[in-house]
Length: 283
Image (cartoon, rainbow, N blue to C red; front, side, top):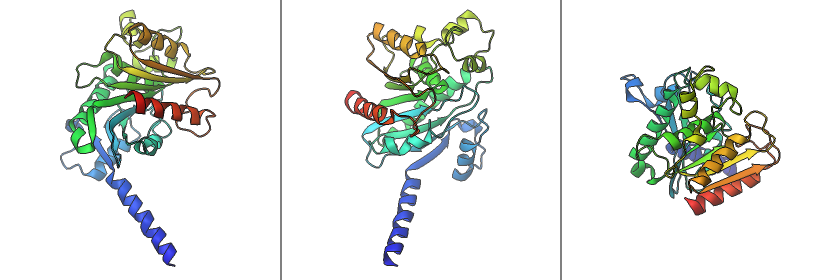
């Protein structure tokens, strides 16, 4: 009985501790109702309607090392895979002392500026709360998977100021280009439309936008990815190298697309070990 009581108290303590380490907030104050409470804000952030109410969920590390990562889940710019490409990774990053931030960004619905605006605002929020969350404002990175990788690499190449520039980027099997010959058709259609001008196409073909100030990158993919051609990652990596930007590219022989933090991916022990080492030694 005593053991059961102790176990129950321990679980309750851990649940409260986890709650204390989790913060939710809307990105834009003007979107929040005047009488918003933490409960209603949480409901808005977790609402499945990704066309409005963008927000962040912050998982604060108990023993922060100063690093923070903002994750942009994938979903072809039509939905967001907030589980295996979002919240599921929180504990893994927290265990390394990294503050982990899941971004719920608005879907573009043809308005290509919207996701980038939300990603920039997420960076501003993290840096404005840096002292409170134990974060070094010079060690804040962006991470993304698939179409979320396109948003992450867009921020890395289109940031508007030092305040929104990521210090590093981590990309899972990312969409990088909008060029029809090797883009992900659904992501392109949702972001810029099928009949986009060449100017707009090139703007969001992020391999063309790399320069010497593009942040260092860790990129991973599966060679048998049939959803997003590997040329997206390889051409982006090549552009980074040409501009003397430190970059790591990890290609696994199988796994397809969309594995995220899922245990079904054979090479999960490899990518987690390699990313942990890179974050520890390079950031």
